[in-house]
Length: 91
Image 1 (cartoon, rainbow, N blue to C red):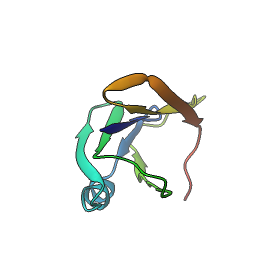
Image 2 (image 1 turned 180 degrees about the horizontal axis):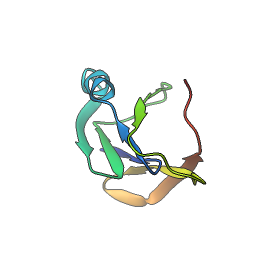
Image 3 (image 1 turned 90 degrees about the vertical axis):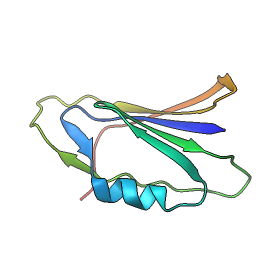
Image 4 (image 1 turned 120 degrees about the vertical axis):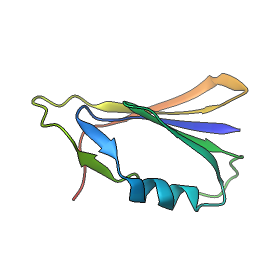
């Protein structure tokens, strides 16, 4: 099982529409939404490229917004962690 851990930007939340779109993907086993992070559990990955889009909405105005992280790791072997970051949202 693979986990995608998306830390949310300060003041942002994931939209319910985004959750529905993720849940409808066959590769997604489970989604867990916490106040500052979203966990996306995948059954497995293969060599095929996958794209996941999360729609966020701003709940609170925050000044000097800092980048948030995205971590991808194997549930059973978290040592092979891949980390990336994002700092803004598209329209």
